[in-house]
Image (cartoon, rainbow, N blue to C red; front, side, top):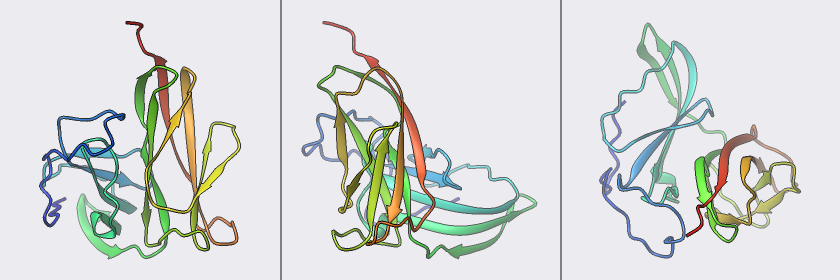
Length: 193
């Protein structure tokens, strides 16, 4: 897979802005690859060795800043329906259906009870608006909440343990229009100073 973003250099750092409260990586801007809505892989090089089994797949790739937030621009997202035969790309077509992709949080977070965890997602082939499509988020078994803007948000006051975050793309009537996606992450208590 060769990915050639315009005006962005993979591996370069991004400005801190107001995201100092979230963790950062020294690897700079990264490309996240999501195959068939499974946990994604990360790369910060334009040539990526990414084995894909024979068959039909949905391949998504999107750019992420140094603080793990997706870059909020349709041009920063690639969405393809691909077919692999005998280890080779046999077909590639642009996916046109709207969907939502899970980006963050993932992994393990060492937190105090007042620390924030980044919540981020990517919308594909749609926009969000109060009177249009929206994304419903549900943490564990808590009541879901809905966002109508494509922007990162945060969670605070998380208890130690495993957590699951489920995302559902809804139409203006509140009905799901794409398969729900979810990710999991762990919170551990930060060591006392």
